[in-house]
Image 1 (cartoon, rainbow, N blue to C red):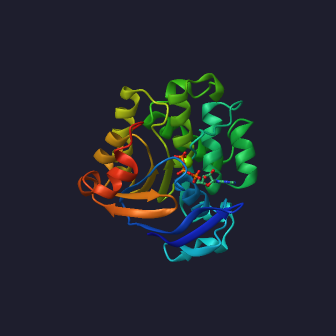
Image 2: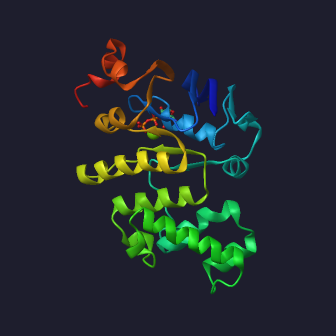
Length: 253
Ligand SMILES: Nc1ncnc2c1ncn2[C@@H]1O[C@H](COP(=O)(O)OP(=O)(O)OP(=O)(O)O)[C@@H](O)[C@H]1O
Ligand SMILES: [Mg+2]
């Protein structure tokens, strides 16, 4: 479904990626792990069109993503969340999710859905979709609350709901469990697997929580210093001496 080949990119002389490749198949959950600064978020930024690599190829369902601008990439069926949770803080939870529906709404219908009573059929459908998503993610009690009033765990859910509202086929999650407590983290693990099962989503996620990664991923790719040093099933990755040396065995983990 997604094919990332041989990416290279530098920032002011620092090589952030040096020939990185990864693939994600339909309905697959792939984790991208590695030390801080390894280049994980940069891969997401390239796939979503926010950064342009010096070389390499990125295709999604056969389409060349490097030739597209971010909103066109989103329309192809790719949605993401950010490492530093990015919600519209002064908008309500419902409006945050309605903005995620924009891929399927005309500008007029989006304006209507956000501001005024829903009159058009398109707006009404978007509101229905948004409410269903809020219910699915356990956010229905917070629909009318400003996003900034919510604790981080719920803001992360709002961001996830907004990404899902675009009805993606591939979801990129950058540290979805970052800052969550163990109970929230476990709930999120179950939710991600169910979303894959229910919606047939493919998921590429970056995460430092190894229990999270090892229990929900079909495959794990390990990035170190801009290069992929391993790619395989969670059990094989956890036992890989090179991975332990570069990442898993570090004292601060
Ligand atoms: N826009 C940018 N400008 C300059 N340097 C950047 C930029 N984006 C990333 N970098 C640098 O590229 C390297 C890789 O960054 P990246 O954010 O991809 O790492 P990461 O694997 O996501 O790390 P972390 O686990 O800390 O989130 C880092 O050295 C980072 O400082
Ligand atoms: Mg990162």
